[in-house]
Amino acid sequence: MPTGSRNSTLIAPQALIMMNAPVVMESSKRFAAKICALPDEQRLSQAYALLYGRTPSDREKADALALLRDFSTTEKPERAWALLCQTLFAANEFIYLR
Image (cartoon, rainbow, N blue to C red; front, side):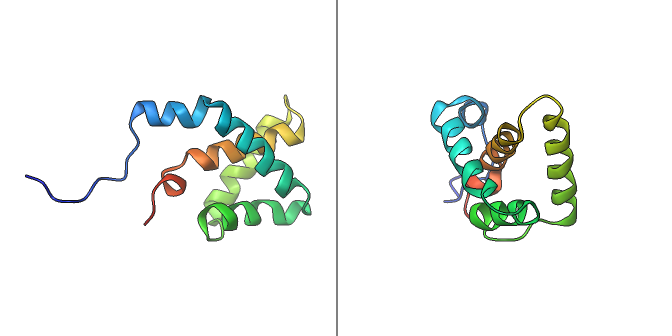
């Protein structure tokens, strides 16, 4: 029975596009470069404000910083930030309006 609404979930092809599409990777690099111009302590908050219109929760901050720390062992800091930004772009919260 039609309800006129759609669940806010991603299907596999949508998720794969957000992970692999050149436009998403390029956008992530550019967004990371934009926020990397800010002082370290402002970067994550600014990313969440620009992408989600809110501040990150304590859990989100901890997860993001852990991801950056892990990536920073093998990647340059700019690349680590680009990967984090790509992750933020791929989240349901970025893709769907509430």
